[in-house]
Image 1 (cartoon, rainbow, N blue to C red):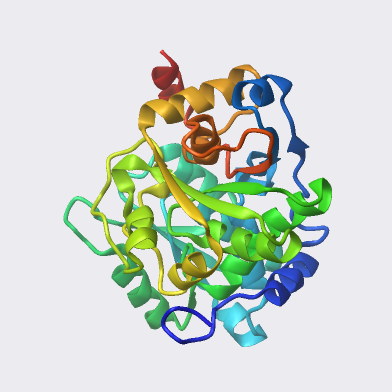
Image 2 (image 1 turned 120 degrees about the vertical axis):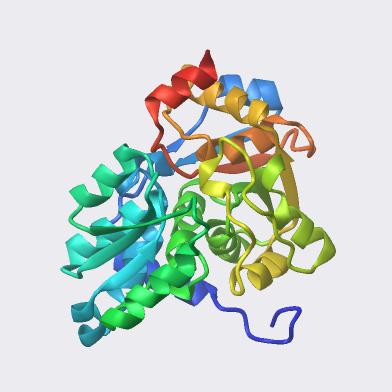
Length: 325
């Protein structure tokens, strides 16, 4: 049950079932450690490297799980997604693997590299005009209705959430019980899925969501227990520029997450620098949120065993070079 008196959208059984669907399709990504990082934080940290997932981010888990559950007739009519980033590529790749036509709604000014990657996986790309204030969700929903296709949202979908939760399931299968789990948060799909898995596999674990300080809607929602919004936050963590948690993810976050941290862009760059230089891990700014949260020292994790989800590695190298400069 959640605060609103309803049933929660995702349970451990859903994550377990998603893991079976993803077996042999999604990469079982490595878990890395760093003595230097442990010495710096006083914790024993285990990094779940979703930057090595297919298409470069955890998003593949949720997209494939959602598409694989479509009935035959719905699969034939195809899917529509709206995203300018990792969800676009995840739905495109899942569609290709499952033989399901995928159309992705992207802003006309989306980075060319992301458009090319999405088309490269075989998806149709349909542009909308962000500058003119066009609502991408309404635009995508209109296309889906017109075609009789299924809309696959980036986070607020039970099968997407369950798929994302398999990342924490794998991590804890490998490490055994942990004291803490730090997870980045945009719309809360990864965070809520991982929190459900973690609370089942490691009772007593404290799950912490980490988001950019400029887009602190989830932290405010968590503290006030009412859904808060933020409009177009300016942050280098482009995967966490969501306006709010979702109708499904918010109750899951309230039920299973223990704390929230926010980090500045400067702290994100520092975390990225450590991951790139010391651990040889190419991680995008959003993917480094959880690392930055742990490095900040705002929570006392000394002597604890801590899981950290590195959510993705689809980074624009030119932009990263400027950040490091």
